[in-house]
Structure formats: structure tokens, C-alpha cells
Image 1 (cartoon, helix red, strand yellow):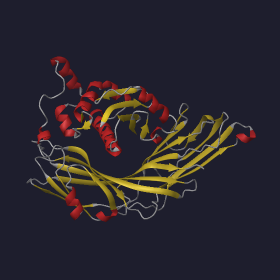
Image 2 (cartoon, one colour):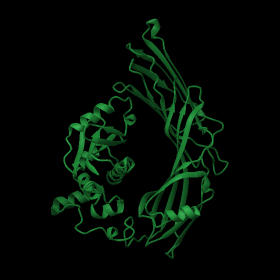
Image 3 (tube, rainbow, N blue to C red):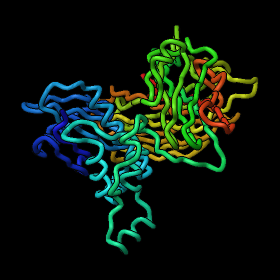
Image 4 (cartoon, one colour):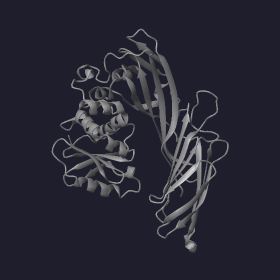
Length: 426
């Protein structure tokens, strides 16, 4: 199946190289990098690239590329999902997959790859099973390794590997039993310069954090499950039960995990709770060498978001990523709310606003042009989050526990946030 896996940084440096079914020459990374550099944004690089001998299947997350090379026909979505799972596991172990974190934990990265794949086929991908075999790095763990000369790898097979529930370890006990559910919906959209929605799509996920003793059996029901479609579940969910009764029945893993993903059935385009008006002018035709930019952000009086109560809607974590065309040499930007940083190397400005208030944030400034094509108008990436709101209006009506005698604390919250939310400037 998978012959080799490479991890590359945003600058093209190969961080990790692991082979299973023969050695793939590192020159394929050069071919991949040349193809990725043809796109202005790294995430726009095609997920599948064909060379004379290999298929290169890749994902881009957290400023790193993870590339799998295969020589035969394989289900590409299976490989892409496995690559995402590798990044999820690294994030679980190291906090993030930043370049420095990977370099500081090289040995653990390779140990995890050894356990997650066997002869090119996915093997162990559950965090609980991996943590039972390979301890996450810590200061005390490093001190213990230096003092005793022992590695953090267990000599025994994880208990879950030989049970019917490999996602849950045995003998879990908590003084206080509790489970938390987060319903998170993301809005992917394209908005034209007049503020009209061109296209939109809403996807959602249910993330859980379980701290329950023993082997609890949970049953979760929704108020209106018909508003969701294309559901995918964690392996702990009994899929046949959901297909028959539209009920999510499962024995949860211990700790944080993603229970399910879904797509929201929206008959029309979604109305976002925030607007972004921009004016970009290049007047280099008069040989002045300068251009002007003005951006205003504010909260809309109405939107498609559904609030559980009549409280005021709070828009938080608002930020804009503003790319400039190559014809711009430098900029002079001022904002009345938040902070704005411009990177002359990448020609991208990042405007961090935070929580929207009654004062509408505004950015104004000038651009120094150096000649070239001023017809480029890269879209603005808008980021925002609204707590206690959802697009679908889905809510958990009940969460029942069986197989155990205790009564756990249950917490549920909803969040709507932007996914790939683009605002056109022309």
C-alpha cells in the first residue's frame, strides 16, 4: 500500500523520512515541491501528484506537508485520512506539529510511525493504545530515561489491542465522572466585494472529552437529526443503530476524541453574522507609484445563526489575513482596533481584532508599488467564532448512560466558526 512517508516544512526541508516497502528516493520531494510552488497558497497544491513511477498523496496542515508515496492503485481517501490521523496523533503528543516540536521529538515521531503502520498498512491509530505503548514526552520522562537508560516504550502489548474495544483501555477510574460534548460547525464561504454570498457550505463535528470510570455505554439523541447528512463516526459508534434509529450509541474512549462529523442540509446560502467591506485602488497608471486600501469589518443585524436563547450574539477571535499582489513592494497600514502586522517576504498582512464591539474596526493605508501586474486581487481570509450558536440548530436532547451505576456530570456547548471564509476584493 504505502511505500514511504515524508514530512516537509513550509520552506521545503524534509523533516521526517520513513520507508516500509522499499526505499523511495528523496528526489520525489523535489518534484512535489516544484509542483506545490506553482500555487500562491500552499494549501491549494493538488492532493495527488503523479510522477513517472510514484503517486504522491499529500495533506497540508499547520504549515507542514505530509506526503505518502505509493506505487500501486490504492483508495486515495484512505491514505489522506491516515495522513490526517498521523498529524492528529503528533498534535496529541507534542501539542502541535510545528517544525521545532518535530525536531525536538525525532525519536518519538519514528516510534509512533512504527506502531501506526505495519508493512505499509495502517495498524494502530487509537491514541489510548499508542499512549499505553509509547509514553508522551515529558521532562520527568527524559530525566528517567537518562537516569535508567530505558526508553519510553512499553515491553507489553497494550490491553486494548487484544480486546473488542481497542479504543478504550481497561481499569479506568475517576473520583468525579464527567463527560463534555462540543458541537462545532464551520462555515466555508465565498463572498463577493458587494457582500453577497456566492457559495457556502456548512460542516459540523461533535468533539467529546470523556472522564468516565469502568466501561460506560452511552446513548445520545438529537432533537432534529434530519438536518444533518453525510455522517462519519468514530469506530466506537454502532453505525447500524444510527442508521435504524438515528441514535448515537457508543462506548467512549478515555479522554478527548472526535465522536462524529456531518454536513448540514442548507437549502440556500448561509448569511454570516459578520461583514467585510474592502476598497483597493491601484493608481499606478498615473505613475504615482502608490495605491490605497480600506477595509471595514462589522456585525450584521441578522444572520442564519440560531441562538438557544434571546441573548446577544458575541463574535470572537476575529482576524483577517490580507494577501497583497506581487506588484506591491511594501505597505503602510493603520488600524483603529487590534494589531496589524505586514510580512514583506510573503506580502501578507495579518490583522488581529479579537472580539467585536460597538466600534467597527477599520483598516486604512497606502501601498508602494514596484511595477508588475496590478490586476491580481487575492481574496481576504476572514476568521471568526460565535459561541453558543449553530447554523443547523441541532441540539442534544438526551445523553443516557448504562452499564454503570454512577450518574456523571454532562456538559454540552455549541460553537459556530469560520472555515475557509473568503472575501473577494474585486
